[in-house]
Length: 563
Image (cartoon, rainbow, N blue to C red):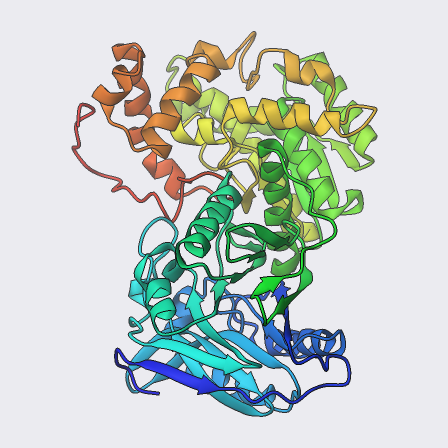
């Protein structure tokens, strides 16, 4: 198959299996599953098992997600010299699977370049392949760094229908599916690795409905599932009728082998008997946070996690997510009080740890803080106390947690939220010390919503009610409150959402009705804290613009606040 603009038409001969002998139907299986980045051999083994299971349950065709053989996103693994050989060996290992067509996402490497591709495998032969045409290069995507652009349409004939192939971004553009329709496609299969963000499933359904109605064609849409570093893939694979209606929808955030049968006479799918549970915004965000932490910890090989439990709402919600992700037996909570820690905080931390049945230890930091202050006394030269002394407390806690991690092999998960990360209300090498920040992309106002949501799931609240209702405080000095240093969180988060998530400038935010001085102050805090965020641990992306790979600003710059 050459790299050109011609359409490739292939024929995949049908050999009837004992489980599906009907000639006027085609049964598709969508392999919504987690394929770990770089684990090519294990991914091929999983494909083998799923393909045989699907075949034995009557499937004619099984479809795997985008780049499933290597995992997504593979980043610079795509530049490794041994990649081509490893991929060829893995594809060869799938060659003995009989009586089912396999559509496999993989990286194709040849003398023309490297492509994000889909292979058509059947009865020991690769019948053809398709190269992704539109390469996303925005947000978390960086595909133009690695892949060459595909230029051919690919269709194959099977059991009386002509099937076209697309990969992810191709479907969001108008021309690829239109070209397939023009060339005679009766149905389109699209392979996807579409990361989660709040509301993304609705956007997927909208585009699928639009494309199917425009071209009066059914669409088979398979998506990846599971956590990979800071990304979560939420599944939700879909079969769409030619009129745009949803025939089948897979569960969100779960591995699932979903089946649907197409009637070749009228190109209609059978419809599923029971649709999956519709998730609220709070529910899907919470599930994404659970999956993101679960897969990061488990696939990184840690035996458990450590949480610095303060008695505040951020650490309380983080503890809940950790228990839901990993189980109580893998979560270790450590309360590290100092002289400014309130009795209420101690009581609430202990109550939550008992309620969730996690290991709970109290480790006072008074001696550690005083030792550091004593060491620094001659160097400070009787300078008046300021935030430096407050930060020593946070850093003493960070040292203790990292020492416990070093000794027992548990991952320290930090508890800073997106509001704090945005304005720098955090301490480098203190409360920022750790390997994963569960709430990194969750604003403080959303933390409250998620805490209330989690409490509503059980008859007995898992987070003490006064943790939610009392004013938030870092408790680094007497009677300290967050709002001593920050605007009210509802106002702050509104400004931050406009500036960070919606990329709105100073004047645009003021035009929304916010005080000019406050807007300038918030923007300055955000811009001046970039060096902190660059050193912060990763955390699960749940919004349209998270800190990390999709928001990269220079540490040193003279961009005006009014710009």
